[in-house]
Length: 97
Image (cartoon, rainbow, N blue to C red; front, side, top):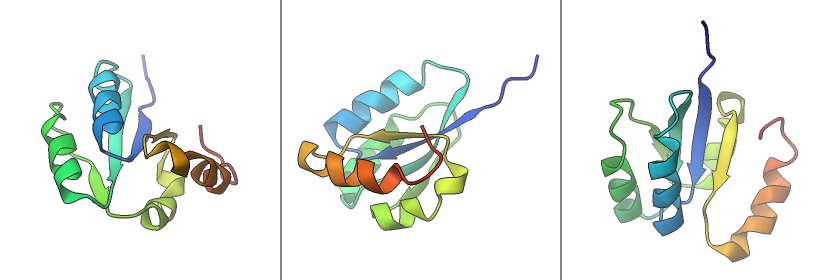
């Protein structure tokens, strides 16, 4: 049977983003295609958690990630809480989960 891979982007790769990465890898139909965080240390740790051999593209800011919206099926917002509302408002203008 054919199962479409769900392309995931992680917005925020600190502690919560890293938790989401570990959970996402338990599902065969999810693939993390993008990591977004301005902190290189957080990106490095997030990359070290990915064990399926399919390494995501790394973008340093949300604006660059938003430019890739057509290549994303599922967005995980794991940024600091105060950033959630403005991020949701920006991303909700697009066809994305």
